[in-house]
Image (tube, rainbow, N blue to C red):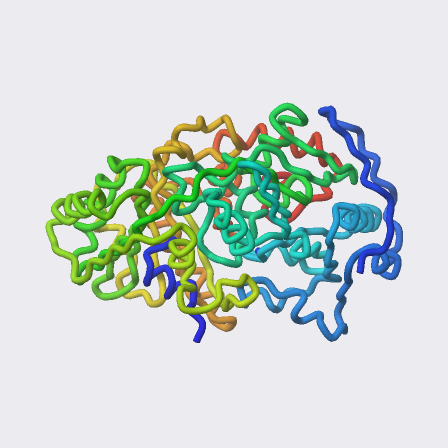
Length: 491
């Protein structure tokens, strides 16, 4: 039986044949805002595109229902005009040429984990990057295809004793994760995923394949580190600095019913003072009363972790009903957090599910944590997950990358299991809890948990970096090729 994302979060405490075509045009100098050069729309030439990409699936094709799927089954009703499987930057350019010339919506997909389903646009062209999943390590530098998913990346790097800080779900794409920032179990030790980015190859709206870095097209490079997926072009590969892959002590503490207010309060102060080697989250689960669990990882010895956990228990004033800690090698630890210790971690083997979610940013401890737990009283199949930030994340200034929440204590994810028939009621429940969290003083939002109904979403996701992101989007995409409901162009 597959393990649902909600069950996984509760259990472990963790909180998308090539034909020849022209070579890509390379531009290595920063460009100023060009005038519009978009031609008048021309009729779609699907057959012409078909011979320029690895595969093209359309409605009526035997493989279309599978080709259009994303991770969230709620979006299975999505109806793109076509799904193009690509394996080279030239094939990405071919897709963009068709979309640009025909005024066709276009979106790239790697893991397909967009919380709002934006990687499968209705009547648009999906550029499926998953064939571009090669991972190459040269020295301590890794070049990773934009279609790679986390369990393409982790084993490939771990065999050389290296890693990048990233997420936990095996089928999450490295592309969307990096472009939104990239929070994970090593964030406090090594930073966000985007903090390790050295350069990226990206096809921009004009069809040019650019290699961007801090030296070349630096504004675009800045925007790709936290500015959100789908906003500035289609990235075809990322080059990262890697870090030594540490052994980790994974841990989880389950606390008794009724203790959520005390545990949340204790956790906030505890994690704020924790060493950078410790990452943790606090999961509050719907119930009467709500349940609470603390989990995480420690890049050190089990004997060094034990007094840290003792301090949390003392601050909470209640003993856990279950306390577990186990030292594991890096890759085994990532299997643990991915919920695949006893099954395949292969990205395509992961179960899909239906859910609705939102987020807030906890910048400082809540003065009345009991009110956070109260938001889940009487609800069903809903969790609130507090994922710790700080340490290495806070060592980078908010304006140094597009990810603005550098001084925050934690991200807050609200996660509701849903069904196709119950989508609207689940969305209403999520909005109620999200707004309840706002009333407690937590604002902002994490763009990788993007919610279609998020109020004032541009400011919530990008804060003071929004104006600069607007300028960059206008410069590199004056014709608004990369536009969707919550694109930078519409913020």
